[in-house]
Length: 421
Image 1 (cartoon, rainbow, N blue to C red):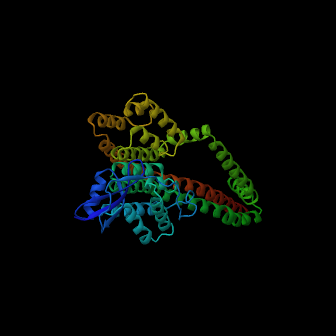
Image 2: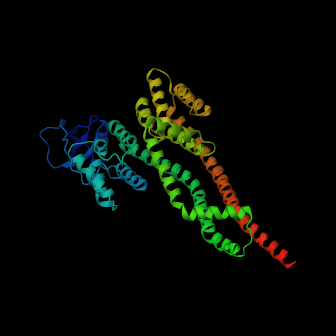
């Protein structure tokens, strides 16, 4: 019967080699994974080796990084999704991690994906685990991503973990895109409205009012106010630029402090109407990510630690710290979250049912589905509400400008009629 020499990683990240006797290479991979090892390389032996006992080999800390500036490089979300999806497909097809990364080095043509694959492949050759190599690229692989890969290596189900990561990345992108799309049209309206107002005040108003002043007719109050506004815009625009720049600078200084950031994030979290998009997006992403982590063997405390940064909100991060402390002290997660008053009662009640039923991961995925639907509803509501508000504001400003001009026109025609009589 054929024999195969294997090189794999154990749960501690050490390289283990050994020899197996089995029918074919696929069976050898299956046996290695059955020992809770992550296969790196499987080779057919032409001669019988002297010993078939596996022995651990100390990993080498050195690694050659093919992607220059790995710690500062970033990767577009779509490219990270592609990399994860391709690696998951290759591992699911029965390839070892070493072979899969070797193929990705040749297959991926993106200027960063190829070198990234080469760097990870070289790290495996140097005796490091995939999750350890990914930690060299913190701006590409988030702590959540790395910890899920580490859980997959420890459980021997790396391919399955990567498939779930693909779904998770797609869900996160879909959530982000829905919120972004809700704000694109209003932003375009604001830009168009400001442009229209600036053209009115700096081009049309001076031309019309200069004609009125030449007639010697006394201008009505509305027209004089319009001329003063025009004078301020054309002669003192730099004051507005300095004021805006100063306010932006003060805001940045204020929000760089932890207390300032927390105060601003609390204001954003409680802002009427628009905060609903932020909150529902957080609820859905929190539930989806927590369920995925728990289903893949990450402990609850470690999952909560990873979820502290998911909102990108200092106010919520502090709340999540209190939640983790309460769980450490023995409280259930649903009780700990309920005490913070940041999650809806429905969310807490469903989580409590999941804890009691023993199907916590599945329940969190159901909760995520519910709040993604709620997010879609909120996106549609806000998308329908903002444009009319912006149009009303633009119409009000333009109406004031037109009123100022028409007041002068009516005053001029009245003066002409009086002179005629």
